[in-house]
Image 1 (cartoon, rainbow, N blue to C red):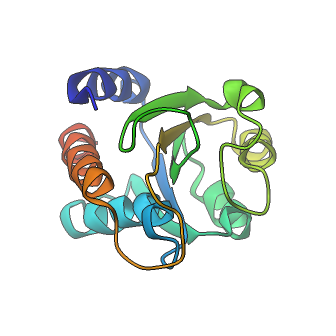
Image 2 (cartoon, helix red, strand yellow):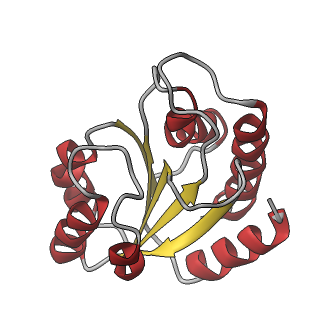
Image 3 (spheres, rainbow, N blue to C red):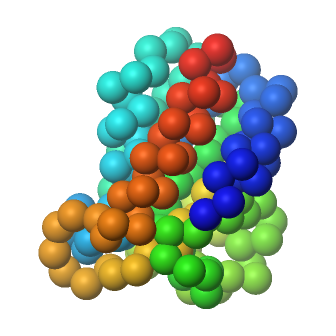
Length: 165
């Protein structure tokens, strides 16, 4: 993963943020699908701010729409494994308006596009998806080495960006 390009994209995307939701999406028993939740768990160990709301959505982000709306964020970043056709571990920051181009990007029940539309309607926040290409989403626990490396890189990047918010 070209770490610096994702870092630059995220820094630009967060540049005018004041209240931030970072929502990790994924299934703990589907190997690499868990990457979004893993990143949020690692962020929770390192970030402590009243202006950042970290959520472990697991496979039901729609269950958190009310909490997200109540927090009244300026920015909502979703992190999820996504079928992008890239090399395992490569990440892409996807504007939610582009989600229609990726009809089967996620493995979860409610299409992320619909979830994002609901959150945007309720909050007027900027919303993006940080999608990470999985290697293996079969049943089992633990990330592949490629996804473990990417999760660590993205965690470091986000801590660097969000620590001052």
